Amino acid sequence: MSDWDQVTKIGKSVRGPGASERETTIKGKSALNAAQRSGAVVGTEKKFATANAGSTGLEGQRLTKVDRADGPVATKKVPEEVSKALQLARTQLKNQKGTTMTQKDLASKANVDVKAVADLERTGADFPSMDVVLKLQKAANVRLTGSNIGEPMLGKKKT
Image (tube, rainbow, N blue to C red; front, side, top):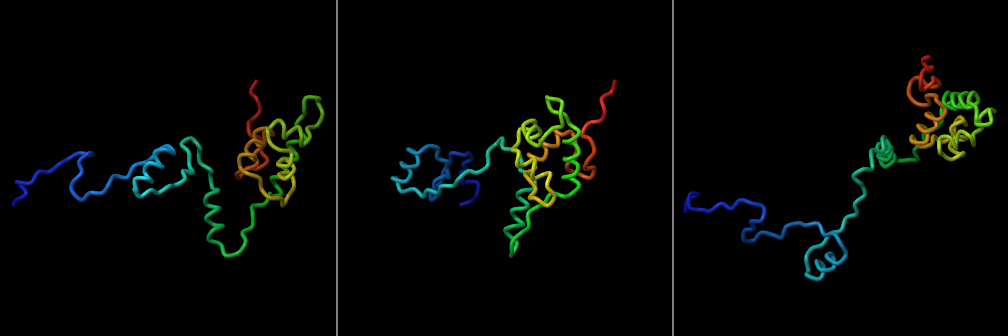
């Protein structure tokens, strides 16, 4: 018999003899229980990522480094220039009363924990998460990341 005499079926719903069941995603507890009762092979996997979660930055690379390391991996520490820049910027800022801004005032302005401000102002402490650093950087109007640490975030206002 030649190829000319054979019928070729095209389409997603075409199932030939001996073909296994299609892999489907079951949503819901009742459908999962029904599939288990019917004796079908059921595999469950947890979905960790969400569509709008956004990227976590370099944290995944760090976790890979931790996994591959034999011994303990040192955490990132706060450099002296970052702590000095934040202290100087905070002392130059004024709070609502017109006095020098405290760590608590800066923390409430940046919507972060007071401990995060204290850790970032202490040289050698564990570096807080990057989103906390960016919030403080914006609230204090001073660069705490990159090559130009200590410079103002925004230039002087044009009059």
